[in-house]
Length: 329
Ligand code: PBG
Image 1 (cartoon, rainbow, N blue to C red):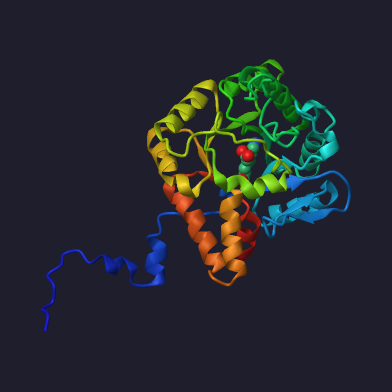
Image 2 (cartoon, rainbow, N blue to C red):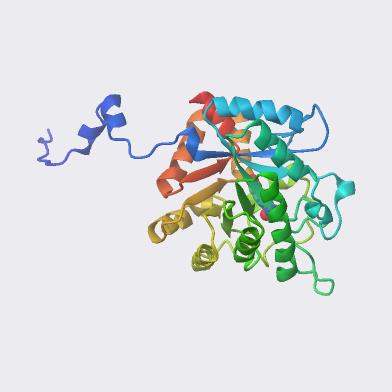
């Protein structure tokens, strides 16, 4: 028979029962840490399912607002707003994005009027508005996305969103210098209190597929590798984040989340700025697809995913699971 081991430390003592385990739990998720991405579309009485994202809908405003009130009662008070733009309103330069009475500005105004307690992140990018699905204006010769002219449009969008009442504008385009230009323009127009949540480390990822269906930009020509980060790189992400912090970002984001936990954790160690992670559409769709087959325990898996993002160093988490999560727990 094996003798009793002479152990000073027996780590299992701290896991003996649930009271002790709860007492020593290091990481928590509260509804206040979650941001729920929502899709709006024109019209009335619409709740369109998105086939690639079961459980997620495109809402018309009249139906979205009661849903946001319901979320708020459950403690979920932050949303990220994305528009589904009808094809006839799109063109090569995304002109409708800077129409001051467009779907986005109307939605921001109505949401902030009806639910003033909500923190609203409005997306700044051209892809829902362009016929080619890129986040900016294309160079007629090379077909590449032009940096500085795109930034000029983004600054105009930022002012419209701020005027409509957005709490944070969220540039998701990955153009160089956009955070600084947006900060300057907002300040010059009297919006020094409107924040910037920068999609700083946004990788050129295959995990965005279902989202492109949701916003109707899946007709994308080519890829986004000349502006989004290479999936192979870490130091490049740190440079992007550093630039955005210097330019005035109030919050920086890592996107996608799960395959980039190493990036989140390095940022947490290096910088004191708040860090957001985006648990993106492809990550959501994988869980949903497996759950629909009965192959996994969805609730436990979602909890584990969100915990991993908090443990990795995210302060806030953008996730399509948000509404489910606050209803389950
Ligand atoms: C583009 C944008 C994308 C997402 C948010 N904003 C996709 C892309 O770069 O094509 C993806 C979000 C998700 O997958 O959930 N401005």
